[in-house]
Amino acid sequence: MLAAQQQQPVQHVSAVPESLLQLIREKASHWARALQLFHGLEGLKLQPDLISCNTAIHVCARGEAWQAALQLLNSQEADVISFSACISVLGKAGRWQQAMLVLRTMIVRPNSVTYLNTITACERAARWQQALALLPDEDGEACCNAALAACPWHQGVRLLGSMRSVRTDLSRISSRALISSCAQGMQWGHALHTMRSLHLHRVSPDVSACSAAISACETCAATQQGVHLLREMHGARLGDGVPALRALARLGQEDVTLCRGALRAAQRQLPSLRPHELAQLAWSAATLGIASVGFWQQLSKQAVMQMRRCNIEELRHLIWAFASARMANDPLPQISAEVLRRLKAGIAPEGARRKAFEDDLLTILWALNFAGLPLAALRAATERLLRASKRVTPQPTHHVQDEAGLEPKVVLELEDRMVLYKPPGWEVCGQLPRQLTEVVTPALGKDCDYGFLHRIDVPCSGLILFAKSAFAYYDLQVQLRVGDISRDYLVLCHGWLPRSRAISAHVSWQGDGPTRSGRVGKPSRTHFKVAAHLHWLFVATLVAARIATGRRHQIRSHGAFLGHPVVRDEKSTALGTQLLDFRLCDRIFLHRYRLAFKSLQRQNVQARCHGPTATGPGQSARLLRHLPGIKRI
Image (cartoon, rainbow, N blue to C red):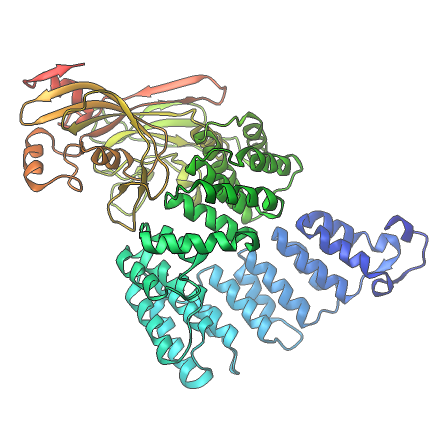
């Protein structure tokens, strides 16, 4: 169609059939191609007008191409739509300062959409003071709602009060924004108070407001309050179907009555569910451990029908759910083939969405490996995509050597990756005073855990894998997800384990609360191999543990689930047992003694570490050798 225009005289693009602009819109998912098509209009003797220019600016949002959006803004005599669209692109790209500058230098009068887009840009960058300063003088409920979402909960309460007295009545949107702000500030009490105030203002809370209140309870580990809210909403929109199941899954609560009613409603809704609702339903059902074969068969058919309409995040939820549920005749081969098709077609976002896209692919690899499905082709395609944008050159590191084992040290160092020893009392990265980030210079940021591939509980000790470059980090991430990295631990458990065994219980936790094993939560697998039995202060079993998944406190939770808690694990043992534990060990008896992985040259590499000289699990073999009543297996 474009080639047919080349022989025509120069004309205004609005005189060209609407199909030309529609073609640009259809190419919006491939934003670079769409912009190339737009810039080619002049070569085809077509003069772009303001409408087509605004369309192209909107296209820039797909790829967060903020530089291109600014160029387009300066290429025409822009109107308020042009400025608002450009500010929206800048906000999505995390360029809040440029968004503020565009607002200040506008040559036309800004409208409520312009203010809303600028406030949203500040919200994404956590610049709530700037967001509040941008509130227009005239009534602007949408702008107030955006500011509510941006500011801390205590400022949100004040702002909502001013909205009641000056601007507008309390609305569902305003309440949802405030409740979300309370959730981020871990103020579940204020969130529930806001929910109750809706009834006083004769406002019926919608699904979004209730979901935000559930998030507040989830963030603060107030699970019982969240379930109570669900019971109050029974019969309302949140009380049935997908929203209720999702809320129960997020709270980690297996309420039989609520779950059964919500599942029946969700099954009735299945044919009409949109892709994101279908993905939420699958994730929720898998997290809650729902084992209805009929339900999963219905969900499987619907997933295959809609997989072409799903984005990569929704496909990730579907694959994770079916891998976790482990039901027969699942659609994993078809859905994984769809992911592979997209990778081969080069369908991948750029900018800020790129990291989330890569994380989705890594989760998909893990799920397929957990389900035992072949993934060689998908792994190769993922590695090609990761390799294309990652720097190979490692960054310099510095480290402290301490032969006594009371300080971190380097156990193995390769060209672009290394193995560190973490002593007890040190944190990999977080808030405590002693951090491994003080020992090495991270090459990566917080979104990549500063290059650390995994963690160990602060009271425990063991080996940590560290990447010196982005390329090494993602190479090791792929190895971790497909099971190429072995992580072995020495653990002393209470009681007599008669034989080696594997456990595949799900694990869940809320906030800083304990990790629990059972039907609800994330799928997890631990292999225990009995090494010796101890008869002294109490009966105990020394085991070598290997994890197939790396959940928080997984080994400790699985041991307690079997009735054999780890020695000195105060979250799983009674006070009397703890007093006996103190005589044997001065900390949790868990030590990661071995790591095995592949180098940059694809050679098998392993590192071992027996741990500190202080009494603890690192010296378990030496310690137990001198104890009476030891019987080796």
